[in-house]
Each structure stands twice: as C-alpha cells, then as structure tokens.
Image (cartoon, rainbow, N blue to C red):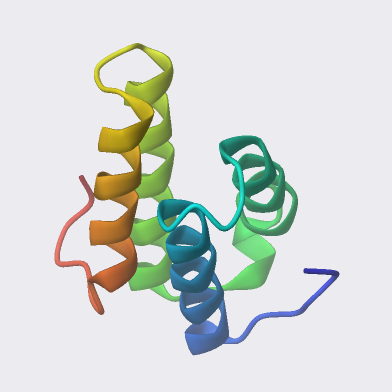
Length: 94
C-alpha cells in the first residue's frame, strides 16, 4: 500500500479495506499482518487521535492474538475481521 499519512477517516477506511481484502481471501494472513504492523500498529500514535480508529486497531490485535492462541480457525478469524470491517463505529473495544 505504500507510505501514507492518514487523517481520521482515511485510517479507518484503510483498515476496513484491508480487513475485507483478507476476509475475502484477496491477501494472505501474513500479508495482512505485515501491512497492519508496518502501516498501522507501529506508528498508531502518529497516525490518528481518533478514538474509534484506535478501538478498531485494538480489536484487530485482540482477534489476531486469539487466533494465534488457537481459540478459533482461520475461517473463524476471517469472519471476525469481516465483522470489524463492516462496523462503521465501534462503541467499545473488544
């Protein structure tokens, strides 16, 4: 995706697009994880002050951790991330 400076809505839009790309099988989990870590997680404080976008990021981290711990299959992970991508505003962190 390249180096991008995000505004509040741009970060959330990019997160949702990447979540759907993974959930729909357009990229691998490894590709999603690399993009997420490099473009969102590492520079999060510099990317946005938007609390809703941050909540989505933290929810994604939780979903990935539960997958890594064997809580569910990759198919189930895709469904969880698809749900996050389709949720316009998160009311609370998961």
